[in-house]
Length: 358
Image (cartoon, rainbow, N blue to C red; front, side, top):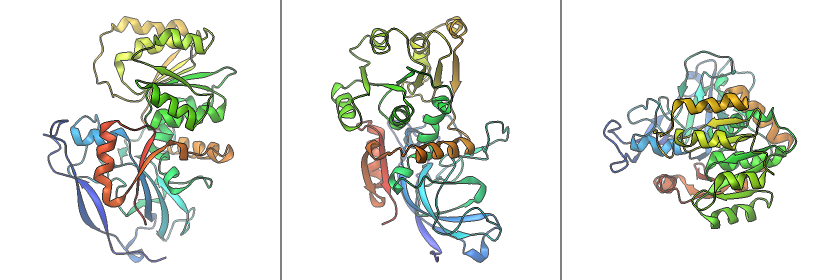
């Protein structure tokens, strides 16, 4: 398969150190060069990017609210679905035409790895571009049952959700999960829960949004309005006083003590995923001792390893999990800025996707 020598990408505008929510960076188009096959390294793979999905991290970098080093005028985004169009001489496990995605943390292959990693879309070139070159070890095969748009949701949001639910290794009878918010990680967690027999409880400040999710996805989804409901009482009601096995915390450290109180009596997991409500908390460190009383764990989530990604893909394919119900809106490549604006606004549920290839 032939591919062009140049392509279009988006880069963040200059000024990352002075940006803010009031003075955000924007996206700027750039022309990039692409090495031809004779110039590739032996382990290089050229990919044609079909679809990119957005995460909060992508807009957080525009407003200086992301806690990882960010390259000045770097190419944003981590999640994509792509097609192999060129191969280095030593690549054996991929062929032209394969559907693939890069792992988010380049170098994070197995949970036991201690190597320093770089994050694509942050301090390494991201995926909001028409083509890219990655080493074969940084790519995974995508599930065969998903579209390009669905597959683009997997690398960050999907693996984060998978890890937040302990890779579905600790599921018991009557297991349940509290999923904060209706963004990508929560919605992905919801679908994994349904496929694994876990009762999902989704939170929102909008009863209409909760109802829409229940109608669109499943009546097995329970809703909790965090502005009007007594969360603890509602969780007890849904779980017959048992408490939840998992809390997927997308809001930040402020709610951790409440999160622990929502867990079942023994062995639950609070997964700290996001920081939507900021970095501050008004609880005392001694309150974390509640974890000991329940034999529970507080788990920091930094996406996951390549093995996690591969294990999740196997589960999705075996269970024929479909992700189309997560798709809130699709934008064309030319409208990438509009997609970012919607992501920053929060006026959506699930995932926003940019269709890169025609």
